[in-house]
Picture 1 (cartoon, rainbow, N blue to C red):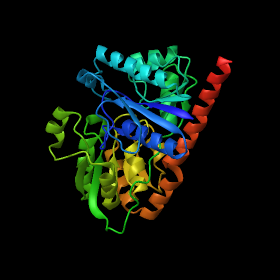
Picture 2 (picture 1 turned 60 degrees about the horizontal axis):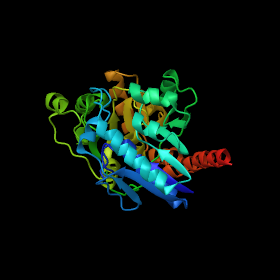
Picture 3 (picture 1 turned 45 degrees about the vertical axis):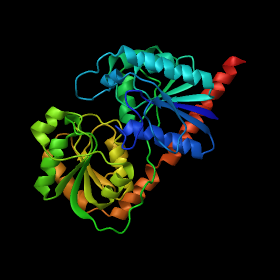
Picture 4 (picture 1 turned 45 degrees about the horizontal axis):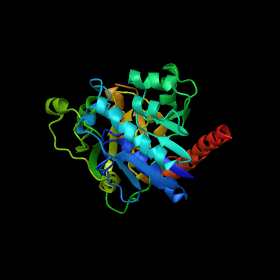
Length: 348
């Protein structure tokens, strides 16, 4: 098939990616390409992903204000964003793909793709009223990334939404390096990720915290964190996970999937966190990590102690069985094939 993969235009696709959805878009496109499909990724100008054919769309820098920040202020309407999506989907139509895998969490993207053979992936819960309204009005096929997220979307008025869980590539199989007494806290630094709670928990159990992520909320960092952090390239992060004793994810929102948790387990690093959103579907309880009840700090400490006792080979084996991108790409291949076939039938 000729497959168009459309990404959000609020930021370019680069390594390190701005978030899990951006990383997943590139991983999925790469995996579909490896399965023999002709794949083009439509993305913001300034993107760079060497393995992929990119169609870069010029965007006004103002579109960055439309980035959805869970737990923060609602994204401001940005007229330039619709203009950018108009250019993106004009380019898609010009290339006439068999199917479109659409990943931008924007009402404009849903509306402007309505006449295309499209499968929309909802990478976030129903946080944005405009996205919910566009989804309800659309006749297209929608999937989300976990059963927890599907329940939220069904409650929001999308009863037919399906589920295709995310997956991750095996970028850097863990080597023989010794495990260090480090609690890794990866991902964006913001309140809903529970960064401050993770720091406190690391201190309580006697582990050295290490941050690896971009500061999304500067005021929160200055008030509650004040430790150095930086976003790491994905292979470097995988190597760090292979050495860390545990990855902490005391999330304070309904995490739709938890790509960091998947990447950590694949590196053999157990996960400890709160049982919220899609994390119970990503972490195999008692095998690849332990999760405490939401906001139960004492339970979190017990989960960390338990995670430190888990067999790291079993952690990795669990991830290899459940979380690789290959089977995910196969499911997308099947779903996109059905979308393409439905369009061919309607055109007869």
